[in-house]
Length: 231
Image (cartoon, rainbow, N blue to C red; front, side, top):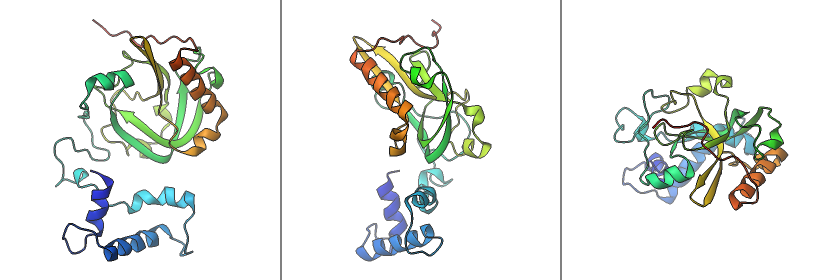
């Protein structure tokens, strides 16, 4: 459900399906009080990022009464229903959104293809990153369609962090960056980069640059699918 609708619902005290100036101000004050746990009259950026999810109004689609077509609930088991409305684009770009961990989620990034010039800057070594991390549906993301460069080391995630995910992938396979050939064109995708702190990590900048160079055709790299699909 769109964030604006959830905020309106949270502040609409007279149930007229509108948000007055007074209702918006009251909601903002209530949120600030929850964020400013020390009563300091101000909230640091780090605290805002860490505490904001706790003040967000619940999504009716995730409650028992609100579950319906396409609805998901945190930690809900089973196969996700994500398919998208443009299959051709899903295949081209590599997948359709399913869920994301909220920034600053800790993720251990493993290097799936250390021989690729697009990952050379990592020297084959895993690394940790804090960011918002997107995941993709079981039926729309496949190593048979993509040449995976990096992915989540899922085994190193805590049980608490794993439990946050809607419809966890049964294969525990979460690609983070990849390349693929589309006709005469080339695609490079990198999941991380939501937070500006990512761009202070030199190897990540070099990784993105190499990916752009590949997409432009200036850098040759193996872009065959990581897994051969059975015919």
